[in-house]
Length: 79
Image (cartoon, rainbow, N blue to C red):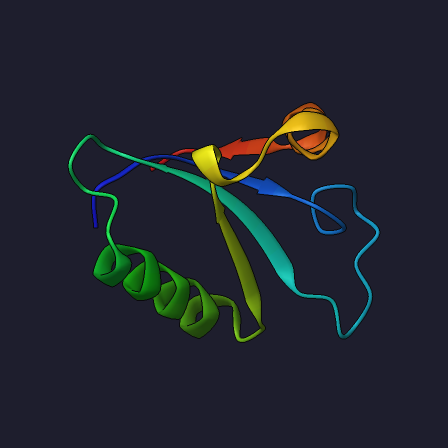
């Protein structure tokens, strides 16, 4: 799917998740690999794997204070 890096963030990363919490991921795709199919395939794969709703953001889709917050709490997942 062309993933360069993927980070976990949000309530799961902060160990504050509730029973109905989703899982938030921040992904950076390899050059030339960021497209709708890869994005959706990764979303579906993560939802199938964790059996919960997944919110997937790309690195270039966030900015400002949200970016700072996400980057400060994110946990790199080895791929």
